[in-house]
Length: 133
Image (cartoon, rainbow, N blue to C red; front, side):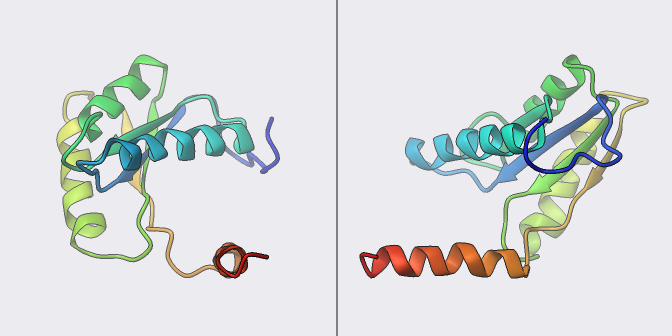
């Protein structure tokens, strides 16, 4: 297990981390690293990246991969800072369309990352880096 506690998370849970998607491959590749870091930190084995648009894998492709790896419950996690049209409308719609292909597989949409005191630490680290410290 990783460094974060896996309370009440069973082996049949898959996580799809969804960003917007970009025409820049480097931006899309970063989501793979985000998923790797999350999986390593939590010990979760079924974590898939997905781009909402402009790039692959799509939410439907990631959903199918999670199911193929044994997921019976899927959490779709918008990798967005605030709620908006994409995280509140588009991603739930794409997830529902993907889930329709897999009766018996439950899914939920997580809240966007939002306001969290732990973000202050990350923000301050970026400020210090910008100052060359």
